[in-house]
Length: 478
Image 1 (cartoon, rainbow, N blue to C red):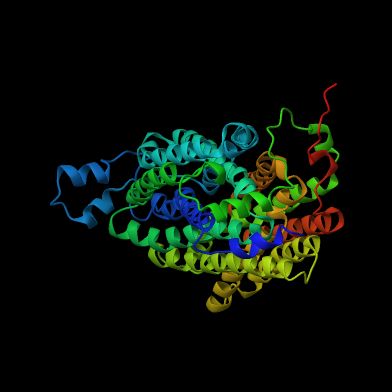
Image 2: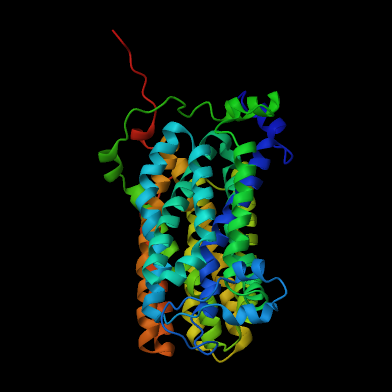
């Protein structure tokens, strides 16, 4: 009971841990912009009405042309950007290829981040992803195979970066502030999606689609410098943290294990139904989210028949709602817990229910309002916004049930989510290639069904208590 005194002193929004959340927000912003860049650029890359050329025909790179001939008009450079003959099925494979790479590194990077530290793991992943983004236009000129390979390696780099975050929060986030801190950091992904979709179309129209990759790849390199300079793996080693904040964080996490772990209890994890509830939640959540992030510009362009600039701006609006709901959801969740209004498991299941049920209802309604411009945009805004309420639900549930293995389990959880992303991206490309109208309807109906199955499983088996196999055991030497 005496540990409550530091909590009042430590809850300071000007503290270092909230600064860490903002830097991680910027890192997530950077990574998602690099990932979603292709979703907005591909509208121009495959727009056969702009330029009729052989598949993967290579023209002079606009960036190189600008440097060699700065007097050349921007519009002329834009017209020279290559256009590729990629079918919807091929686009689906390209979109999902980044998920293949993330899956390959999620589990090993989560385990290694817990042993060697997340700072180097996350920073290296961000740097590699940024450099590969810069080379994407060049890879596209060499062929679709090289684009798929590059996106796969970029996924491996981002998998290293995504997973390491939970290793850091396991040492930096007091239990009553976990939802707030992780939601501030996580909202960077939603804000990044908004920003890239909002300005990506404008960049493509003004400078040419390759500059989307050049600009956001460069921003990532700058972010790496900030990351390696400011971030530390735990508060005890940070040179700028105040004694009061360090004491508050360390005391609030005193009940958690801080000793290095020699092995991972795989068998116990496999038999743990609360973990499977988290995994199914991730699978359901990522299924619909991947479709929205990947295909939203294409959906707006084909269904509402708008140009690339307006498509990008309209596609960005849903992610303002997503970013806002992520932060507000985290604040509300921690408010309910700090005032003891609801139990921890009730809060997790409440936000999981809202984050899976509400977007499903919106997705089911979309095909019936396709003729209404305003109604379609409203529903598209609500889907990502309500879906991100899951960030205060099962998304951070691994910190509750197994804080010692949070990073490792987050890797597995995201692996399930990314498998869903691969399947949903490929299936969406196949369905809409058959018939656009019925294809989109089947896409949204299937997504709602997947969400409902995941929600039922999580409500049935989800828990928030530390599992027995995740507790620290003291060994007595004779």
